[in-house]
Image (cartoon, rainbow, N blue to C red; front, side, top):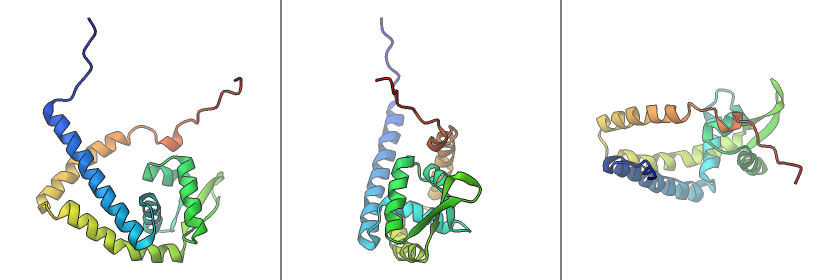
Length: 168
């Protein structure tokens, strides 16, 4: 007799669906705000925000990919778009001859400053407004160990690349 597949209990299923729905609704609203106020995608905003928060304004490409949980090729494409618009510059990494460093430009900082107030307004209005301060602390306390658990495996950029079989 085959084993029954593992399942989620009703509370787990409800929590999972609520989390996914909240994340999807928030992401949609944030995407819309970023497109309207700065013609940025969500991932482009994440990249600019991470660079803008860095004391040097720079990060290695692999660190950016890990931070925003994005593929190396996808990140290369997105950084290329930002570079074309004069929002970032790429240069060889000073400490790794194979690495590339991305640095936010003054134009990138200006655009980040332009879109950030609307971004904060959307996040506050949709996510934090219906919660008390204690709820926010509880939410952060619940999500932190889940995030840490999910990030405990090596980042995608550190995983070995699959080689295509050339014998086909």
